[in-house]
Amino acid sequence: MKNILFSTDLSKNACKIALYAAELCRHVGARLIIFHAYEPSKPVGKTDLVPEPATVEHAVQAKMDNLTRKLKQVPGLSITRLTKPHLTDDETLYIARKVKADLVIMSTGSLSLESVTAAQVTLRSLSEANIPALLVPAKASFSPYSRVALFEETGEQQVNCIGINFLRHLSDATKDIELIKHLHASHRLALAVDGVAEQTEWPVSTDPALAIINGAQHNLAPFVRACQPELIVLPTSATEDGIAIASRIKSVQNKFIPILLVPPAAA
View 1 (cartoon, rainbow, N blue to C red):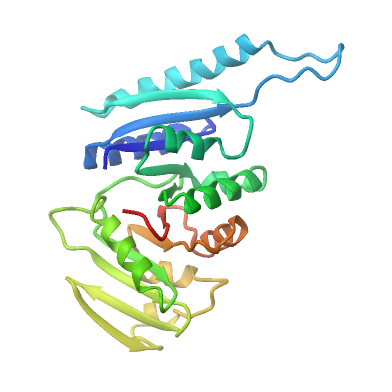
View 2: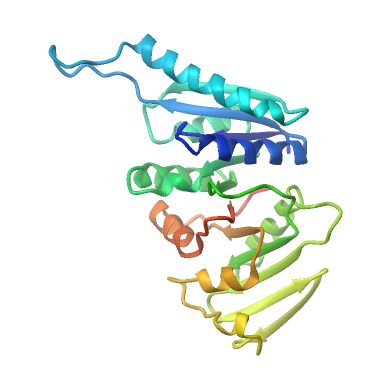
């Protein structure tokens, strides 16, 4: 993994997500590319007060300067900054392809009501381009992943295998990944610990913490709370649109746990 792209709106939580991205880059030895697509000024009438393009760009660069300055606390980090006018909803995909990004990091805040449509377009286009995306909540703190929750559909073994292999780039090399699977279609839970897999029909355990797990795809939060993962992995398919992807994200979203979207052909 060489290049990780952090696509940011430069909001108040941008610094927290950027620090997470920086620590991840240091862990895998990748370059961090920070990208922001700013809204260009558009004159709409003689009496409207519209900022000059130079003023808009200056404000954006000032925010990028401040963000980069805070990231200097991460030693050995290579940072590239990119800005451009936001002309289409596919700007992130365009930049990801241009810099040959191995992973795109976004804030879970991008799925807020104000920006959900643009985020859906971005997530769908990244999935179609087979570029993994990591959605990071503002309260997340990075540590190499060793306990991972993988949500899957039965019959998607190829996708699942790709997702697990991609995890090797991000995991803690000193530990075996403890992989916890949730199988939607058969309402089963599969546990893989130290590479040894076990599958049991629901209910999976007499443990009260696991007894609340169910196969309802509209509410998988109980599963997340029960297994307490450091990372949630959602394999995506070529047939899913942005709305479907965003809906799956919402069903497992947590204030502290990042969500990794792995498309069918991610390497």
